[in-house]
Image (cartoon, rainbow, N blue to C red):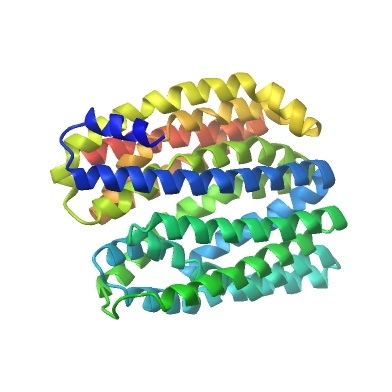
Length: 411
């Protein structure tokens, strides 16, 4: 793997020895950690597929989607802005960012508590307990997870990867055990958020003890809030598809849809495009690296094209071997797999973020979800679930080309 990365670098623009060492070491540890997390996530997916009914998994996914929307109030954009601050050696920004995330995250917590009370009043104890768990853990779950952004900004991908893998492994063992022992999705939510929050808190405290200074980059907090506002509509729309499915078609159809989308998201997570690029881009002007970024963007398609073709062709066999009860998900998965092909556009989006081009980001993060909502309104009544899948794919394609347009405007 390392020799392949070096070969790619030598073919691309002019790179210093430092750049090559950074890319090799960074790519190695990020890919290694992501492969481990992929394996863990895959095992958890199989456990859900084999031991939990579609109704149970659909309900679990509904609560997760609602929690994702409520996470907006915990300043979801803060993690990205923190990376740039830490890359500039402003370690004290970590503690300040966590305080802000907890403070604003309490808004989402109160809303989740309100939903919990509503479901209790209506006699749905499963959703009552699920949303109560979200209300208790959500602000701290989101805030403590910033330890990962700290090591990201430090470009210490080894430590970042080891911490993230440990959290994923322990959490997965506990969740899988809960799946096997019970068919109650609320218990699964309690275990997921409870164990993750405790582990995040442990590694956050461990990270605090390792910071080298207390210097703060105040504008990182403001930029994190800007990023949150920019991405708020997009965050809602990213989860609203599952809520629409829950309301219109029920938890079983939601489970079928989720088992089509989930593997694609796991595969995309293996490719460390944005993860590797953001800290390095945060150190200098993107304009000075533009030619090299463009060449890497084109070369990334050498990876994503064959991977996309392979997963589309292998999908029926893989589903029949691992989760045969979700064979209905295969056609949806094959269309979702086109998103893997579009992964290189993430490099351009990362460049725009690193340059802190607020106006461009506002346009991208507003126009994209607005288009997705429009496609939902048109395509879902005409084609049902297929309309939903097509809306997601077409929107990602639009977002990619929009990122390309604004990247080309960077000088």
